[in-house]
Amino acid sequence: MFDTMTITKAVGAFCGAFLIFLLGGWAAEALYHVGGGHGEEEQAYVIDVPESEGSGGGEAAAEDPPVEELLASADVGSGERIFGKCKACHKLEAGANGTGPTLHNVVGRPVDSIDGYAYSGALEKVADVWTPENLYHFLKDPKGYAPGTKMGFAGLPKPEDRANVIAYLQSTEG
Image (cartoon, rainbow, N blue to C red; front, side, top):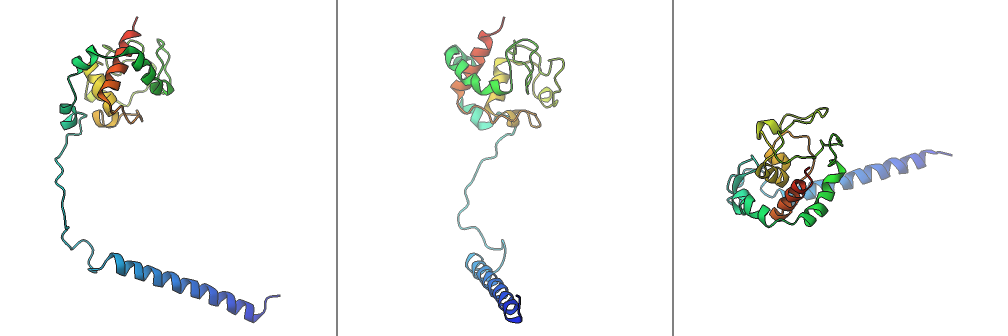
């Protein structure tokens, strides 16, 4: 069944494939690392990027209109639709925690105050009360506003969307 010639052919095919693989790697290295040194060359064009604050504020927050102005023109109906993204983890019923804590009466409520929910403690370092402004900045970039938070949501990039969600949350209080 297996004779010497078959084994020799298999070993030869393996060695030939390995040789082609090594030659391909050598050719790619020669193409992409022309200078031979790694990181010794000066970059041809450098883009200056200003440093930004990691506290959820920074320059991007300076570009947004004032929170009070956005809330004055917020649309509760649109906020309800956008809140659909939040429903995966949060509930609006009192005492009904989901993956995240209940958002019943969240506006004006102390941070990390729901009994029976295990908070990460990251929010207490940046805010005491869920004011509309604190909610606004948290909804923009949860991990940037409160580094270490357990919330995995990426945030709402549009200022109007954040204001609409806050207006919706305020309208459900009772």
